Length: 243
Image (cartoon, rainbow, N blue to C red; front, side, top):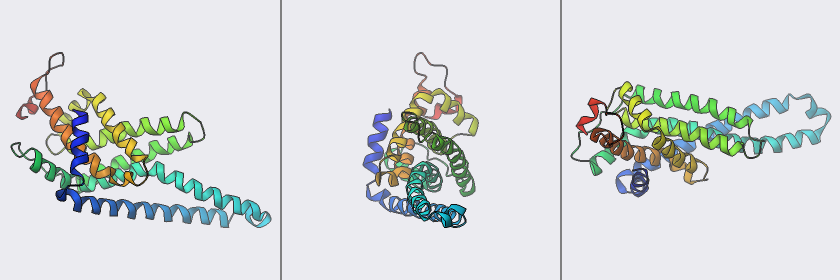
């Protein structure tokens, strides 16, 4: 299921029907990252300018600016999942409409989340992602733990976020939570795919659209699997039977 969804999403993000959304998503992602960069740069500048050591020891000032630049780069990497959450919440319905219309024309279409609710989803996960990644950032200087903590935390968060956005077009929150818990292993693996993309420079700019498209496909497959009541699994929710 997951591999099929990954290849389907990779094929579709460059298709003419999604290309316009992709460019808008990249533009918004870059704009948010630039704003974050400028904000952090200003904070560092204020701190260093007012630091007592700057006047007494100029070499400390120069070293601090160098470390600040490196620190800002690292900070942006850890903040990218949160930025991705906001962008995904903004564009998911546009992506889902295209994918559902092209690949699942016989299925009932999903209901677009109200703009405020979609944005709230994105901001909620962005806040949670920011909190978790700040903790992961504290582990940055511990070899073997830093990347692992970043990857595992974001695999869980991104898998959960994208699934809730995609499934929320069809089901109430309690059914979304039930399906999410039923397939938590698959969703963790899906989140790991998205988290892996976040680590790849330039490619990570397409993460919101790729993740949204992949999760729309994966939600369709998981919902149908649950409706069939695969052997060895507990009974699927009644509301999933329309799949």
